[in-house]
Each structure stands twice: as C-alpha cells, then as structure tokens.
Length: 121
Image 1 (cartoon, rainbow, N blue to C red):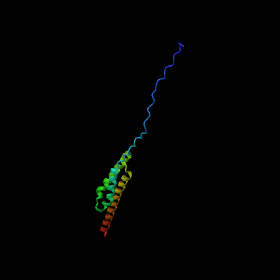
Image 2: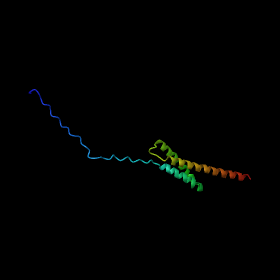
Image 3: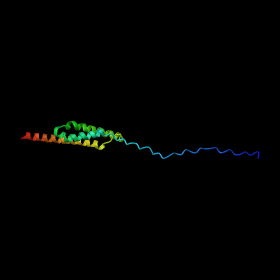
Image 4: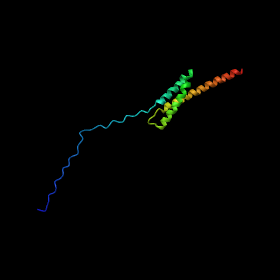
C-alpha cells in the first residue's frame, strides 16, 4: 500500500542509573553544651563565702561578686536558654551569698546587742 507509512521506530530511553550500594545517613549534629562559667563561678564564690568567709571575713569580697555573677547569669539564661545553662548553679550562688549576708547580719546584731547590754550595767 503506497499511502501507508510505517510507524516511526520507538526512541531509545536509557534506564535510570541504579545505586551501587547502600550509603549511611550523615552523622547527627553534635550537641552544643551551654556555657555555664558564670553560674559555676557564682556557686563557687557563694560556697566560699559561707565556709571561708565566716571565719576570716573573706566573704565580704566574695559574696557580692557571687551575687552579681549569679544575677548576670540568670539574665543571660533567660535571654538565650540554648546558649547559656546552669540555672540551678546560678540560683545556688545567689542563695549562698544571701545566706552569708544573713548570717553576717545576725552576727553583727548579736555583737551589737551584747555591747549595748554590757554597757547598761
């Protein structure tokens, strides 16, 4: 039949490449430890205030520093909790420095009361 044309030959489509083997997934990201240096320093100075500070008034220097570092550390933790950590240690430093100031105040009051009562006689 002269008017009939043969269909075009099918086009060759190459097969998709097959992976040679199984590849492991990428390793998980390493967790970043939060910075705790101010909180640790606050706790150490607060404990030193209560222990060493009461025997030789060394706490007059360390307790205010522990209090300030603890407050600064808490503010940093509140603003960026993923970067900073150690909330418990910061609170511990604030509490121990406050405890030192409370004990020091009681000592001063008792000595003052003893001085006043001894002068009355």
